[in-house]
Image 1 (cartoon, rainbow, N blue to C red):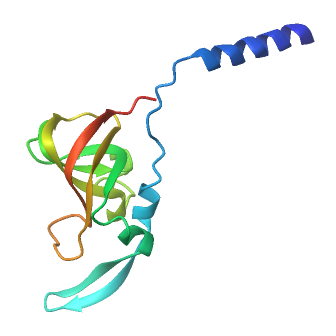
Image 2 (cartoon, rainbow, N blue to C red):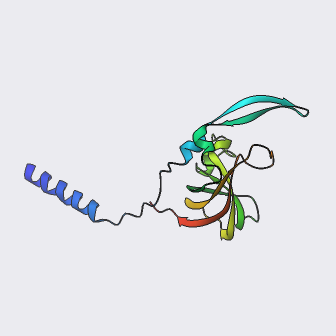
Image 3 (cartoon, rainbow, N blue to C red):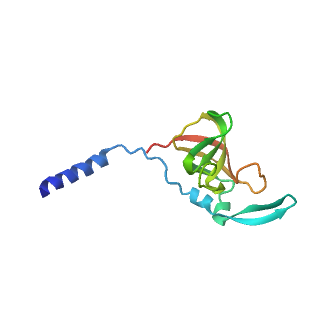
Length: 152
């Protein structure tokens, strides 16, 4: 019986090693740096608001080309476009629908339009940290390109 179990174990191990691995990017080392933001209460002529305070490691990414995996949240043109939100979390847990905060999403402006997908994707572009425009997310990825869908 031991010999049989040993043979089965080695067969399963060899089989799993021989399988094609399509894993392409998760997890991201960049998302944790973007999560590193705190919020400070401020007041202006329009009332009280919370201002983001970014960590040094987050500010170091400003103006740099980064690659991010995530999930599309379309809001312009519905099923195809160059402007969407990329969430580090699936839609049911993202900033707009669930438990994620504003630090868990990036506003993306692509060079070329892409169709909506519910599969995780990976995009690359230049990161801008927004501290002044309340009509945009705190993170904006400009001149971005789609690297592809992530299969796992």
